[in-house]
Image (spheres, rainbow, N blue to C red):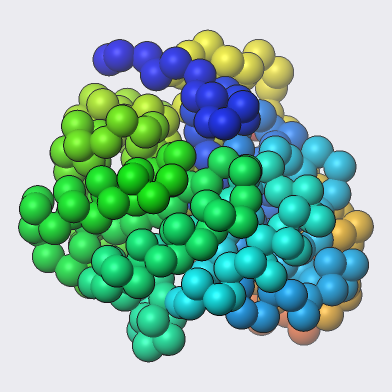
Length: 332
């Protein structure tokens, strides 16, 4: 396997070349900080931000804009459907201290597509071109874009779209290796990331279906991409970045991992530090849905948290679960 070098994008150094994916309800400041503390991540990303409503968000109150010490470098992902939305949104991101700006061109959610955003833009190349051009005019920050493979496998259309993105000033391209309508359970087409890599000269990140060090190796082997973006796999195992960085490039991994119960409690503490009380329980439930998968009987943890009415109740129930299933306090 060829080892990707450190990525440098407009002066922003990404090492290891591993990026935390934007995920609604998940990649808020608490989880980003937990992942950063465990090590191995080169760039963090916010949840998807609506360019239309962003200028009305108050950074000191919004869970989407909240961040804390160690929560960086941080890329902010914008969802836009009109070039007019871009300049005011970029002004907000500059004030927030964004390290980079990412354009969402791949979200398959029907509600997003109905508004002309996300993966709908891959079917409207002229509209996508206008958005990218507007963003490039508004910022000197590294500008990235996240896409899927399209509506159907069509090399000519995908190549034209990716070359257009590079030509309009995108500095880094992330490819989720599934078609728009394919579910997450479908095996990703990592070889198609390799096709994109051969068409453009900018760095390409591979994304989709990476839940382990072995998955990371296979994706890099099959695609030859410059780095990886990890999403749901890093919610199931927040130490996944650490495992991949240590296993592939010998970066970090020398300190023992805390027990999973301690990681869960740390996550709860970070939410209490960073998020308003009414924002915590829902996000804890979203996190636990994935994190519980690390236990053979994790459905018990997920159910205990999902049926809790308060943060205190959820933490007490989780503590009881960990005491029963992790009695020796060992590392995961």
